Length: 295
Image (cartoon, rainbow, N blue to C red; front, side, top):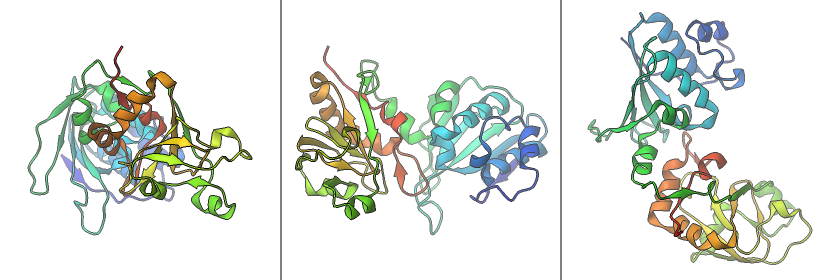
């Protein structure tokens, strides 16, 4: 059995990285620019284990949740029997807010029938397991997301199902300030406590970079702001690159707003975010946001 906690650093200076990954069939599932030391540590430990040997390794949240590592998660399931994941508490390690997870693998064991997820408390206690399929593991591996997603029933549909358009702003906060644009940034959610955003008309910028009446705005990234949401009632605010615009057909707006502003919708977005410190909500994940509609 191997147990390790790798340093989270780029792997560009490690000699023979490709050969290490190739030895355990992980060389084609992650691009060279995204290979980090924790991935190399996983591969090296698997090299040292006998077939069927077990590996428990602590990894950062991005490896467990980011879409860039979907192929890697699938490979760990199919080639090395990923069978359990424990999500550690935030701020579990001293002097860092990093969210981390423990992956449990069996070398060359093939795909497990199910993967059991749990959350750990600071005293070491574990939650009741949530069981997911290997296909769901490809999407993400965090207990907090899957435990909440399991609570939704099958009648709920997603923003993707509704044909929603999700657009990220183009300009940085600094660029908007410099150009004196009527912009909307993550800090502006507090200016509209009732969630009704009113701005002046701004016609000198391409429509795709602005919002309009009927659109919804939510944060894309932030340490403690993913719970915010707002709807544009007038004007054309310019979105910064930290904000998403959600646009849906008029007949779905009421249902989407109800979902975004609900306690359940807020918690879903907070759990769906990924990242070591500041949480990031990806566009692909946002399109899976659940909306209850009456048909």
